[in-house]
Length: 119
Length: 436
Image 1 (cartoon, chains in turn brown, cyan):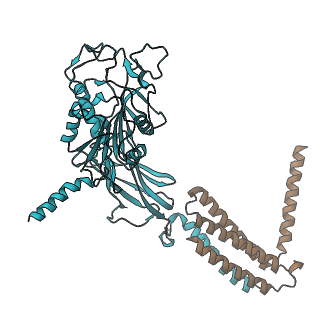
Image 2 (cartoon, rainbow over the protein chains, first blue to last red):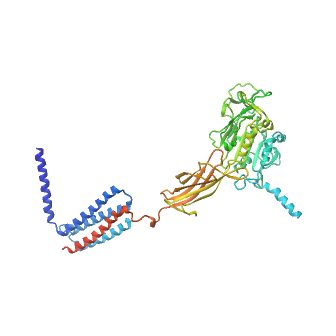
């Protein structure tokens, strides 16, 4: 009984994963690039947190600016993804060029602040 | 020429009149007013007065009820110290009264009070103001049936041979007092809450205070070693007061007397009164135990000038010179327990100063990682010594914006992350724009 249920859960999980993957393969390339970019930012942030746990929090301002730079980048990229997604009806009146311009401006401000705080 | 000579004589004669209380700048020129009940005391207590005169004090003997005596002239004190050998006086003559004497002490002058049996209310009041209560019974004397002085004539055991001294080399001199001190008079108690009063000579545990002529019907109010025979006070302004319950303590008769304490086989050729009172009067008149601190300096390590402000975590050096007055000159004071505080509401640094044995004290420490207005404080209070209280204010500032450490190796991964995010942003922008 237990064995049967375990195998059925595995099967369900596999099925779910496959469905997700096939659904995701239908996503436009531009959105996939954004996802890749977000993944890069988040993994850099995680590496820094692990490094801080090992080395200690001494230049704490540098640590904060490093991690906040990554999370800020990730958040801004996610915002861009929401706005340029054609299936999202909420932003259908917003031109993708306008969304991209907002994204660039916000990034410039973010990096200016990060540079000041990096110290 | 004759005129000039007379002016010079006039100046030399009047200069001693313009005296001040003991101060580190004017430690000499000491005039003492001695108020007596009876001018016969001048000869019966001559040894004590001579020892003062031989040490350079000018004594001015006056009867306590002399109508012309006054401590002040035109707002300036004409004397540095006052000796009251007038236990029975009810009112002083001239302008001297209780308030005048207290003002005299409050302005840093020294005082010796000798009371005796039948001491007047005035003398008792002065003593009370100094923190000492004499036995209220006017006929009472200190009696001790175990440590009295053996005598052929006196049998009531009121002449006490006491050797219960305070243990302080500053107050009683470094030479040990071998013989007992003869005492005949009234006892007093010191207020235990008053930390400025010290019992210099205490009665033995078997002493009590009562009228020796009448039979003891009630238990005596003062008993045992709670009775103080001689006490001293050092006020917060470093004025010193000696209070004795006996006038004959100072007398030539006791100075010269042979002494044998009851129950002790040892006969001393001479009582210790002379040594005890000479040393004690040296202390009272600031010939010993008076400290001064000069040349308080501090600077950064490796620099000579005193800065107007320190930065947190600066290394600094602090030094001070302390001298003790030895009657004629300032000698280096040597001790290993002088401490400096770096103080802002509470001491952040407390360090014992090292000494070079020549009066110079120094130390080095790091300014704490806290900014604000600090003080260098030396609070030195030791038994018998005048209190030293130095403080010097100094502000401490945080790092300036350009004084912080840059390019710390441990922070390179964070720098790398921030720059890779910028590079990533640039690459992403290009890819996003041209990937249609």
